[in-house]
Length: 448
Image 1 (cartoon, rainbow, N blue to C red):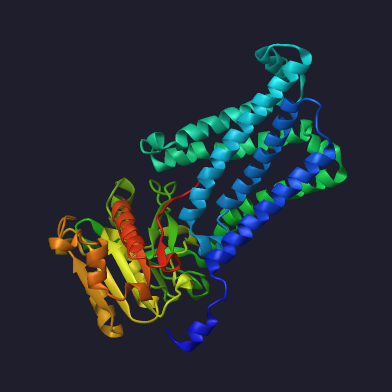
Image 2: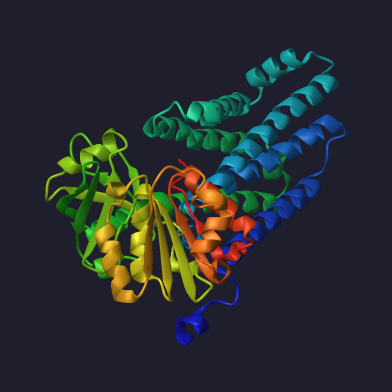
């Protein structure tokens, strides 16, 4: 890397800055909610007090959830959608448990005060208090969404079905908010509390509207992408070339991906994540995909001139996180697409390890070799079953990885491939004690 590029690196790593800012924001709001709760006064019944506080933390978690799924470019470029989606998942569990605690403790507390059974008290509250029924509907929706997001269910649902179910979370949040307005002590407690909660909810809603609706619409109206060519790279891999207006102004970097919608009568409703497979040049974009399902298999039937609606760019798998002068790029299968784009864009000396079952599966290999020759990089294609290779262990195990790249500790490592391969490489890097700050991997993991 040049001295200029070295000097241009921020003192604080982008990922650390984003994580710190996000958790500082969350911590400040937890403190604010707790202070406002205490100022509003606690109930003489301990169960009611616990229930109210759990409800407030549940409401805060919902607002934080909206921030995580807003797909704000500043956060996404630094943290990556897969990390944000993981946090979204755990925040979802937090919402579920805090709202369950709110329901249980509030009901038990009021049942204790009125000397009634818990079920009778819940029925009476639903019939007599404004907002209770809406809250119960919201909780039921969250339970359904949570069940659909469990691993056993997620594996059996098509992405489009899961996504449609997940969208009902927004309806649950609106219902929960109206319940909070109707009955929440935080709204009745003081003008300061009202101002805080209105600001929090409106701000969270605005981030979703901006990141999920306004920005994608504006970018697509500006760039107006169309298909210019469809090229078969192998029997089951195809590349789609696109052009549009002002692509030199599109803030996309090598290694990122879009959610692509091809606006034909049978495909417009399908959104699929594919990386760009060449560094952006300001004139064209290219994706390369393997025919793993009906959606990606249908790409080869696209016609030249088809309009494209692209959401993005997304992803933190870029040179913004490069910390060392040289790099190791590890790809598996069609995971070569962002790696090929990075090879075009990354600084320093680069080693590429391309893991495939056979030489015939190594798509884009001529391009990789051409780029490697032009920039003095090294490309190694690793073929064969993932079994032990002599005394040095599995092909991408720590011993073989160190043998192939002896200075791996001095390089940034970018890894993209099937989940099993990616996990194996990350384990090897941990065993080799490669610093975490130098290891970069991203999976396509989407939140609704």
